[in-house]
Structure formats: C-alpha cells, structure tokens
Length: 275
Image 1 (tube, one colour):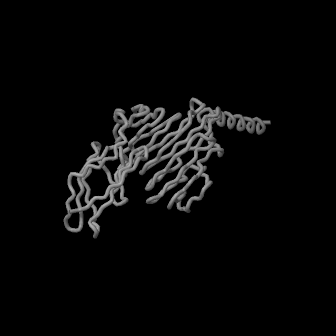
Image 2 (cartoon, rainbow, N blue to C red; image 1 turned 120 degrees about the vertical axis):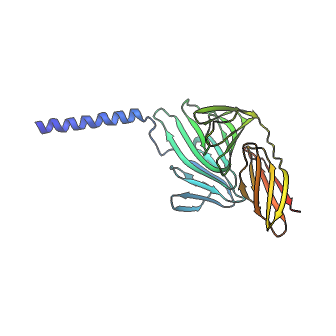
C-alpha cells in the first residue's frame, strides 16, 4: 500500500510540475511555421551549424539557427508562412532564424537576426494582438505588426530603419522609438534609438578627399548615416554623422566603385577616379 501511495504522489508531483511549466511558457514551439526561399539570384547559401549548401526555390527554413547568406551581386526573397509577408534580402547579407513559435492561443512569433547587410520587409496586418515579426541586430530590434520597411546593418552593428508604410518600433537599451511611415532613424550599439526624422532616401556620396599614396588610396567623405557604403563591394563603416575616412588598395586602373544603399533598398553606384 505504501509503495502504491508513493507512486501516486510521484505522478501527481510530475503533473503539477508540467502544469506550471506550461503556464510559465505558454509559447510552446511547434513545427508549423517556416520561411520559404523564393527567387534566389546569384550565390545564395543556406547553412546550419557546419553544414551549408546552395539554396533552391521552394526550400523551407523551419528551425532556429537556419541561416541564409547572400554573396556579392546576389539576392533572395523569403516568404513568411501563411501569407504573413516576405523579406527581401539584399547582397552581402546574413539573416538567421532566431524564433519561429506558435502560442497556445494562436499567436505567431517570427524573429530574424541580421548581423550585417540590408533587408526589406512587407508584412500584412497581424490578426492576433500577441503576434509579432521582428528583426534583431547588434544595435537593437525593429518590430512590426503590419507595414513595409527596411533595415540596414553596418559591419559595426549600426542599424538604420526606414519606414514606407505603417509604423516600426525600434528598441534598444530599454527605450523604444516609433518610426512611422515617411520617417527613418539610426540605432548605435550601446545607445538608445535616435529620434525619428523625415525619410530622406538620400543616396548622395560626398567625397571630400581622394588621395593616393604607396599603392593605397584614402577616401574621406559623407553619406546619410542610415545608409550602407561599399567600396569595391566591400562594406565600410560610417560614423553617427555619416562621415567616413577609409584606406583601401589602389587598383591598377586607378578606378574605384562605390555603392550607397538605403534601408529601403534604393541603390546608387559611383565610379571614383583617383587622380
């Protein structure tokens, strides 16, 4: 009899623990969410852990850690399941699944991490109050419930956000700034988001110095600080005011290609001729 009671108590304790675990974590991960690869162009690589392979149209990302990397002159579109929306991934970008969850009340959570590069999202209005789609970067988080917006991430983690429709909540260091349609802002790692300012979509490249010495060339200038700057396809960092002072190898033809890319994906190419 004692053994029977002891066994019953073990079962009851187990049920109580399981109940509290479910109550504490209502978002139980399910396998019915995914991102679908669409229209890959150029060299687009899927990786997970030590495994990697070229993507193909229709491939699905279903697990935390699934990563897509686009190389130079490459791009891909990731469709979010059930027609929620899609993510346009620009060249030289790495995007990783951090969370794909469905709650017990139907809320759906999609969290993606972008360490560097540029993405553009179009997300329909989410029907559940607790559902969310978020882009996480080294500087902070951009979260939406239904909008069209873009995110640029420099190699040092700075995050530029531009909103075309709806509104985006940018969060960092315990503070949140709402970026409404027609506005943009910048978030620097370790700092709260900047105030939102009118969207510029300004692709101008202002070069104030182009100086060759010892088979290298120093380039000094400014761009809009939310933009990405590439010199000969190599990403460069700019400061919070958009200023840059970089030194790169001098090509034999003394010509450099510069690319300016906005958070919304507008791109402008420049050819710099070194005197």
